[in-house]
Amino acid sequence: MVGLSSVIVPITIYTLDYLPYSLCQLASFLLAGAFEKSIYTIALLSLDKYITITQPLFYQRSVTVRKTVIFLCILWVFSFLCWLPVFTNNIADFDTAISICFINPLADPVQVIVMVSIVFGTSSIIIGFCNIGILRISWRQKKQIQSLTLTGSKQGNTTNMKAFRTILFLVLVFYISWTPFCLEWIIRAFSGFTGTPKALLCTFLLLSMSNSFWNAVIYTATNKPFRESAFAIFCRRHGQFQFSSAVKTINLKQSEM
Image (cartoon, rainbow, N blue to C red; front, top):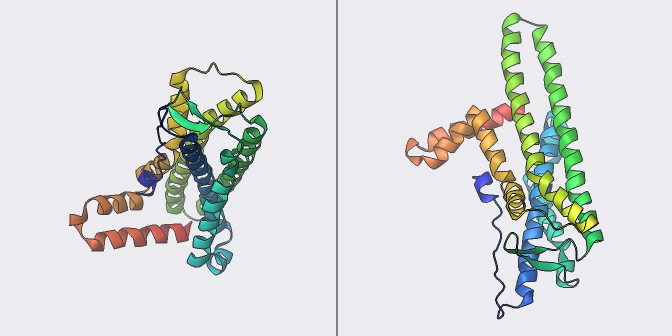
């Protein structure tokens, strides 16, 4: 459900004379802010998972529901505040290649390069660092289990490989989804190159928009408790008890990581 609701659908506005430029600015502002929020959210999820595993006691004491809600609200506000210059610098434009109003990298190359470097660059470092750290912990636990019993070794290998595949898929999907889009933006802003084929531009845009959706698909495909929860959500005839049991199983699995 989170993945389905996180797919960013751009507002398509055609170049009609009676539509004001301010409407194009608003569409660009909303889309750019949503993109930034999406990248930050994925990075924070990785950081949240890393702290949960490495500092469980600190996490339980410090991370509360109230603090999480406040922080997410601040994240939303900050993501959109960064793009307020759209209304003053005239950097919004109707992109005929992808048929949407969006930020024109050629209008303000410096701002575009800085924003992409900060948002995508910082988030990429956080995601890479946290997930590599989780993998190292997973491999270390595998070695510890192997030293105990043969049965534990087999069980540990299975769990470790599942965790490795899930984390690997999540990291690869993030970079595959966002790198082409951000790289094309930087190249266009830095060199002024506008010869990228329309089909590629549309593909880059769709990849970036679908990143959060694929995260949910990966979790569901590689994690049995998530599959049970998804099944319970979409097939309510199975009853509230099964759904609650699946959620409890997920919480138990996370506490054991």
